[in-house]
Image (cartoon, rainbow, N blue to C red):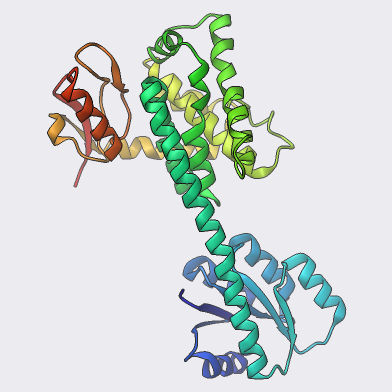
Length: 374
């Protein structure tokens, strides 16, 4: 593990002393004052550990480390000050979630031991998070592939929704993007309980009557109920349950759940309106005029449209199909089964699935795709 540490103090000579003491043990970065410190976190992070002075002009160490916690929650924070102030210590721990509070002058041996403990804490926190992300992502990937075998229509829509959500989250630099990715992968899992003919009707852009819309709407609750049985997926289950909720209806909902649910709604409604034959410009214009959507998310989708406009349409054979191509029309087997819907990004698993069908019932070729300019 790379031991990157940022020291923040308003006295340059103090920072120079830290560099001399620890440059052989750690990768040292320094910032003269809190404002440059926040810039360093934003532009040069992540740091494993940040050590900040308490008394600094303009912004004290408590406020600085509180902001650091918001920007980089995994970073371990240490407060170092010449003021033996019990009240400041309590405030630092409560507001900035400080790992340890030390007073100056602090012996090098003591600070070194604290830093070693802080790096170990960082290792434990990040290792647990990475294990959780990788384990869940792998498990959900398997569930998604199973959905593709059982219900290719729902799976095709899932792939498109995942692409839209991923683009919005990345474009806006949202925190905890892995959760939104999992929510997108699972938002259609409840479709296992929806009749296939109803999904085909909806996917074909045909109007549904009230009873059919109600049946289709129940899939989000089925998905929620399935996911609540999986540990650590409670928040994602709530995102899935609220995937049709407007911004106004999400008031009072925990922020991460509200963000995830609104990402899903924007992506799902955009996809649905596109499947009815609307143009991208008309669909986005309509969404911009409606208060039920987070307009920052809609704007991010407009950027995705701009990227897609830079792609070239081509006809390719199955053997020429590559990852990151986008289907420009529905792909069907020779007996009429929908295998991929228009707008789906090609993945390795997609190619394997098509090749399996090619060996049995056959796949209609050539396939129309959109290819990015190089």
